[in-house]
Image 1 (cartoon, protein in one colour):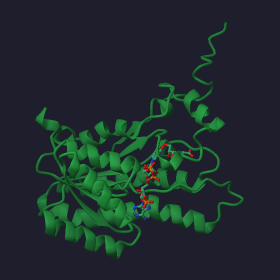
Image 2 (image 1 turned 45 degrees about the horizontal axis):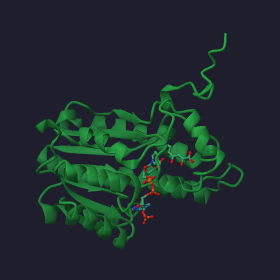
Image 3 (image 1 turned 180 degrees about the horizontal axis):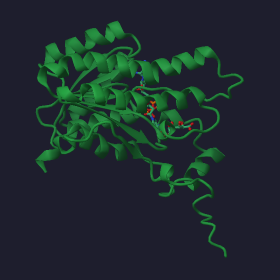
Image 4 (image 1 turned 90 degrees about the vertical axis):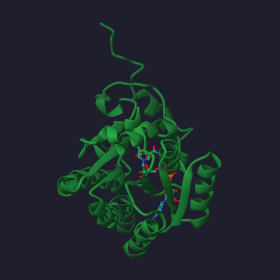
Length: 264
Ligand code: NAP
Ligand code: GCO
């Protein structure tokens, strides 16, 4: 089982002060990695790092805005100065704006594209500078079921998350010869703050009806996919989008799962 061990590896997880990013950070730490927690808020990054250390993990905190590429570049260099190497990048930070096209203005669009897509390229470029020197790297981008499907009301998010697939495949093609794999994880509907405004509404049940596993997921259920893609077990996996969605995107969505439409 050593193939799944991350002992000796150093990982940067963006947007890891809470939610899915914090879960990714905990999972990588439990697998043995030294995990550097990023968040835009220093106190969030420090608290998350302390929680990982309190659980016996090796952690550090680096607060920066992933959309500020100059700051991100300096932060990545600081990380390598502190820890000697950088093996794993989890490009996870992201936001969501729920508005119909009529009111989903260009400021909304740019903000979501900047955080959910452009910053992933910027931070990956800075990490790849160091990964190339060691001829080893794992870049894992956080996509979504909205990377391969859509729904009304989240147009900028759908476009950005579809872009994450292209970014993943393009970086995989270009960085592969340097021993760097690039993959994406496509979560389904996860119980985090991003969804606190829709939980308790009809939408919550609509998700359940259209998910073969008939439930929302907890963030910890994404950790296995992250550990796999970050580990030696995935040494020949690159350019891949690993959906962790309870079967939602393999489901035609024609009828609610409970219905089954079996009446003859
Ligand atoms: P979340 O609970 O809202 O957490 C987002 C995290 O990203 C927060 O820690 C936030 O920091 C941080 N962040 C936001 N903007 C940032 C920036 N400019 N620089 C650095 N950090 C920044 O969201 P989540 O549900 O964990 O989602 C995490 C990722 O998973 C996102 O890419 C999201 O699109 C994706 N995803 C989520 C779901 C889901 O159902 N929840 C499903 C599929 C994909 P603050 O705490 O300081 O705001
Ligand atoms: C929404 C949800 C989704 C999830 C996730 C699904 O309003 O539809 O917030 O966008 O966040 O991206 O995979």
